[in-house]
Length: 284
Length: 276
Image (cartoon, rainbow over all chains, first blue to last red; front, top):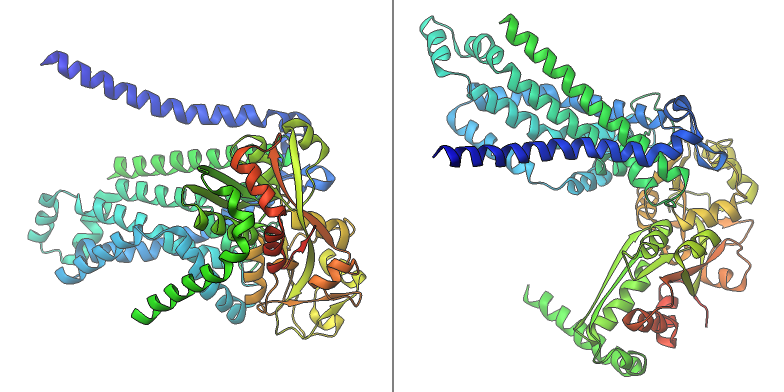
């Protein structure tokens, strides 16, 4: 028996090492392939300069801004929706509503991204253009669609971590006379915060990493947006648009700068939220 | 449902009856062949590629031809890397691309790139100078050139687009394109965008134009098949299918087919100008 355990242990350890190695290898690969660009140009010109390939400028600042605007606005729109939805599903709703909404959210995870993009183009873009002005393809348009796209991730994580709270705590609060809302807000939410933070990161990660919605709905202009109704290009959409350029060209190399930037954002977001969650757990 | 199925059935029968006698000759060479041809690249080429592929695959069920887009840059890159058999481009491959990959180019049609606006837009004619100033962002309201008082939404294509390369070189004389211009990834997406935005201006392959978008005359010449053919409308380019080295087998048969009278007919039906 111990030998079997040891075998299983080493197999799983290998899997874990392999997946960690792949993630590091991807970073190494991007840096290696991006080296010609970093040699040709300075770091600040790449990160903060303008994008004008025919003038030899390959800056991705506008795309960094675009990514931030769209991803943050999407999570800001998504967070209250998901909180409300998960509160209803995990505790406040009646049995039927909880079942119905749970099924709905699970169904939403299965809808392909392109469907959201398509609906956005024919429904949301004209609506924004007529209702709020601007060209219609804008930060706001992409963020609204993106918020809907990432909401199942947030809702499922929120719900699962709320439901995973030890029932003994909930029962104890009930015995002390706490009503449903009090039990939710003062017992379940503080206990579930770590899991909810993971859900939030995952959703933010999806928003940062999604390509199609921004590509179809944000307009892809190569200028940092000045307002919610202006078009913007995300790093991912930029990669999708530029990947067709000549393999050896600097345009193509700039893709790797975008990749590294996205990678760092995701790492930073993960670290930040993890630290936040740890502090909260320590306090409570 | 029955009538629908019936109608499709009738269409199939009719199309077989109508097309078979005249195709007989050109498609004969595909008899007894087997295998796949992978095609990618220029988005202007797609309708012709799909029609040719459909006719060949209808004739011989053992042949599978896949057609993907991506843009001219993708076409050249993918065929050069050996990912596809035929890489389409709406521009000549650059000398360094030809040298690096050993590309062979086959030009099978000529295509114009026309400026388009939404059909609801009253402006149907521009001078080249006005067009350049619109794309440079100097004219940013339709009222400046006699249209409705609303900001102009400029649509353009990404750097890998052959359509963009021709438009930028021959219509804008390599002038600036304002950074607030919106980017769309294909000829089809351009048409959708302009068709849905009453204040849009964009450009598409003449072969892609239909009633959902309105062509704009440039210096008095409307982009149509005739004006591109006669050379009156100057913004035109060749449509190329490229292979890595000399084409062989099915790939060669496919390219030869594009250059037969029947293949050229397909190109003409899709709004391109045959080269033969």
